Length: 165
Image (cartoon, rainbow, N blue to C red):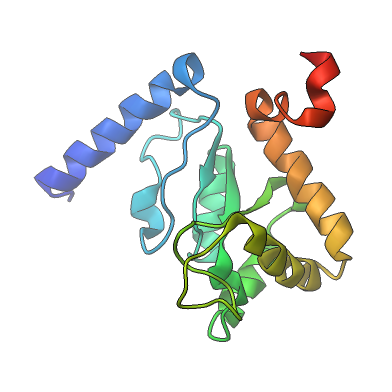
């Protein structure tokens, strides 16, 4: 049984999911430590979104993807203690995977303990590419395409897409 606070948060999240198509491209519940409680309880409340800073199990990843979410990994993926997370990342279909900074937190080595920066996503992506057995360039292209698909409005504002605006 849900506590009153948990029930309120679940109802609030459901409202956000219902409004998402009207006001924004996607939602991004935090995955770090939230487990299944990060997911909406009603499968009917599907919306495009991101499981931000994912650190959960493969089962939670599957539930999130079934609801239409992408799985996004932060610098945690690079930590020595994150082998289980790298194994989960390697199972996520390439077309549902994202890499993020979670700036200013969770900087990958050798910057761990300092302010994270967007430029460090290359370090996280290199570990992700290794988990998939592919080049860093191909991995970056695939995760960038995923971002562009999910956040089409943002992708339209890239300098290389100026002619299309």
